[in-house]
Length: 537
Figure 1 (cartoon, rainbow, N blue to C red):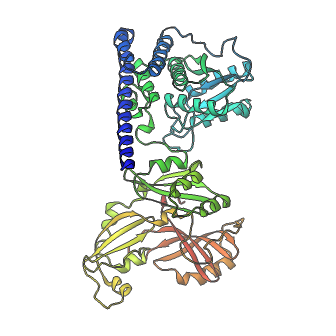
Figure 2: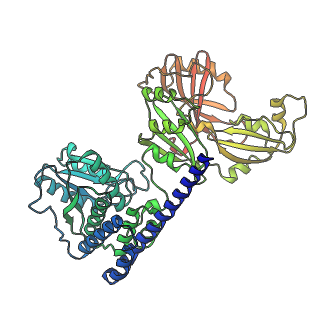
Figure 3: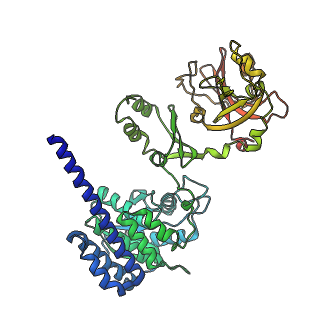
């Protein structure tokens, strides 16, 4: 009984704390919005709200408000290069704020102009560190980041790579401050003074957020100066700053509503779709099913996020394979241990698999065709073979799983495969992503290819040699579902040949698709369908 009472008291206490924290957050946001809306005219209201906070929190936010007034009214902006009189040691760190990339991942002119200011300042203060900030904001290039592009430019222009600190995950100025402060506090304790470098209209906001984060986290670090590129236009309102401070305080959802939807001056691609850069981002984005496959070169993670299927791929190694295999599937912390291994790895590919869905017109084209047509075009049965009550069958083709309904059913005692040939398709729909989506290529089943880790030898020419053609023709007898035309010989490993093929179904009007066929003298070892036909020349 004592244990029950103790637990009950703990739950009551925690619930009380949660309510108290929520109330405090509401008060803080009221303070920010009042000042963002009315400026110093809201001083009396803000002072009353500050009194409702505990002493420590009230002191921090009072200091932040004072700096907010200073940043917008009294801060001196220095153009083109940092001013004289700053520390000549690595106590000083320049922070260059990012700017949205072009759709193809290249830098916009404004970001290059900011870098010119960094270059001049870095030459003036050769012992100072440089933080490049900004994550992936290129609509059509999920792997490029603002920080990465800036680093490349600085190194190409003579800056020692050892001086540059990369913060390449942030998507907002508030996140610039949060992530950079964390990196500096944990890894560069010698840094005490920050100099913000950006466009002139952005300096006050950048300085405010970095100083506010330092105050909130009680860090021994402060903003002491700045340098700016003189932009032809641009302004960030106090309500934009209010939204950024709300994000800094921990309420990202409200912050986005305030300054991304109303006060932002740019069209940002992550309003439509968040850009991911690490496998941990994909794990965090998962809201539905997931599956994974790996070998000693790639880890492939297929998952659903808000109803859309994605495939995330990262480079892998034999050492990481061993680490995963050492994790007991039945351990309570299995998922967390797997995340520790794969989470930090950068993505080399992120695909929206829904782009490969067949159209409704393509699905409807199967209605009235036979089960033989399905099987001869690459469909395979899986799961329970046939539901006699509903006359439905689960099938796999390429990346997707399908539910196929037939007009007839299979008579009891008949051979299932032969019976399926004679049935007529009534309806067909996609039910999910198949495990083939994790092939890179990987193999499920026992064969020579299974656990094959030997080195692949790539030919100088992709032409089919007589030797490879003889092995392929011998193995071709096992290939069903269409006519396999060998196009190119891609590689060999210990008697296993990889052949790139065009496959055409045997029924009228069949569209060709492409596949990798792995063959040896003992027959077919693996088949990996390639459904991204638009990429095949």
